[in-house]
Image (cartoon, rainbow, N blue to C red):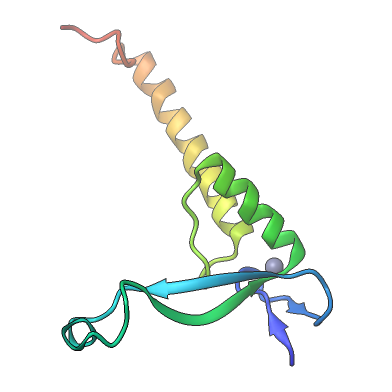
Length: 106
Ligand SMILES: [Zn+2]
């Protein structure tokens, strides 16, 4: 069986340390009405390679919202840094025009 990391897409060799990502979804109305599942419907497990697993742990500790299955975690961090830089630029520009937070007219 070959596992693939759901973040970076690297192959995970069985026996290597990999993180299992337990996934759940909410039941649909159909399922709920018929009591087919509880509050959480289990989905197929995903796996993270060791390095992405470590990244995911750090992100969770920081309270950073990340998602799996689309962009890799590294891309998400890169994007976040870009946004952060842009935000800092804006703050700087706002400061130049006299509208820095807390310094505006009241
Ligand atoms: Zn990975």
